Length: 291
Length: 283
Image 1 (cartoon, rainbow over the protein chains, first blue to last red):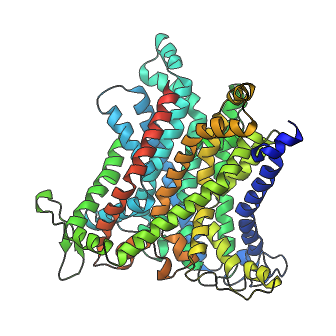
Image 2 (spheres, rainbow over the protein chains, first blue to last red):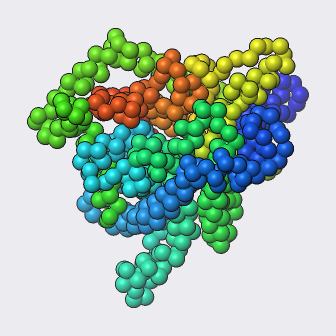
Image 3 (cartoon, rainbow over the protein chains, first blue to last red):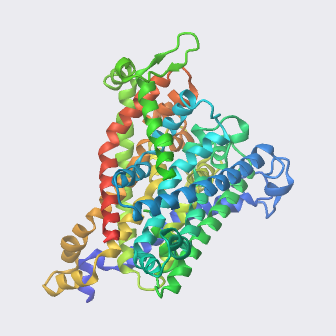
């Protein structure tokens, strides 16, 4: 490309685009990095750096470890995410296999129904669950149980999407080969299909954990009292009240937890890609979870 | 399949509950909404109140403001997001995974944490005020009722969700198609305008739908970045009806259904899109 044609075409100049993209990335990440930095501030300020310290994590009376409202939020988030993961992932995996392998009445309707939670605005789902627990299923108390049921409900669809992608990639040939060799359909599933699905299964567990721990709207609508405040709800209620850096510390702990969960999902997917000879990177694998 | 049962009990039935509450009335003693489960006895008076307020009342202003904010934030997302997605998808040659990782990182940083980061920066003694003080500007109270702060907050919050589907669409375009356009005499600009841009249209639309759906129901962004009635959105109104009062549940439910009907076209577009992608994967 000549210099003249470069000048004539701004899209042809990667330099301009490169700078724009770098500015975007800086804009999107630097505020968060500053927030993380000030969680380690030795002083009370969230804008004047007074040296490095773990004060807001461990020592101060208002630190994550010492302030009950912060510590309880951390515990509640971890507990809820673990519980949701253990229930939503198996249900979603079974649903994905069912939708992909069984042909019959209702399969089409079920796979359509499964997609609707993905496109429903969270506030609509929050209102719906709130009203049903308040008026119909009133044996479910607001708090951990209601939150758990809500989180599982929005997580199932994500699991189905993840597992189904892998199911399509595997195809039916292996199972059919196993059955030709004398395996029952159940054995074929248990000894052939499930091991081949292992990466998607691991990824499902990790992604559900991350989705649950990051959720705000459903957790807030279904919360019941101080014991069911999760980290995002605590960040929401504390952000406007000139909070000490311990709120940043709590947010940082949430960030680390989410990254670990997503990282393990990416790692699991990458492993199978290597084994299959694919060159898709873990980053791309994580990107695929998002749509 | 237990999954289907779960979704019926905890997704379909709750919707019916929203309708029942919207169509029910208020318990006169406890001032609590009383759902009406029988469709034959439905009473649409809550809708009457909501529509009355929507056309000519305070709620109408809030609805128009919501549409304005969402439109402005969406346009900004396209203006900022398109060049970024285009660059990483089509122009990056080395370390593409690293660039992609940078685009993906905000996904897994909690939304509330990202807002908290801006509350820190925009607070009276925050870095934004310190930065403008260097140029001699007086300290501003950014976090009280500024529309521009809320709109930029929405952009900041949702733009990663716009960029990713657009990136995927741009990345899928076969380089050979663009080479062919150039071989046929198109300048790089023509090749972009007449080949790349039309081929990425689906990605732009998908990205817009993905960000507009949650934006229309957002209440936390205006609450955190402004907290003032001047920037109140539909989501704030629903949040107030449902979470902060007890007697207005019926109106809250009715408003939720109105919101859903309003964004239904976006939901359907998104559903069709997902189904198509799934269908392609199956084949």
